[in-house]
Length: 72
Image 1 (cartoon, rainbow, N blue to C red):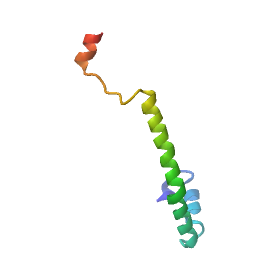
Image 2 (image 1 turned 90 degrees about the vertical axis):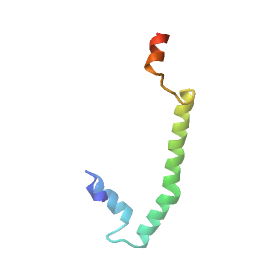
Image 3 (image 1 turned 45 degrees about the vertical axis):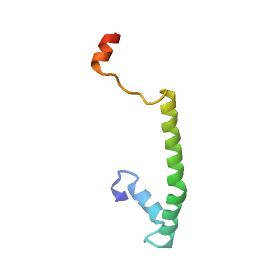
Image 4 (image 1 turned 120 degrees about the horizontal axis):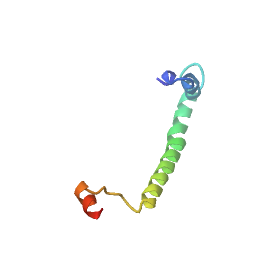
């Protein structure tokens, strides 16, 4: 499926497979992705999300149209 990504798809597929066929190298790469890369991405994106919520001073609840007309 990765080969369908334009321009870099076949390169990504070769890197993840780790050679010409699926084997022990593929398993090691898959394990590394799931134990190091995915948790690191999760921490990064969660931190960004919490920072955005904090910068907005909490969860922003939009006002109803009739409330905005009164407040002007």
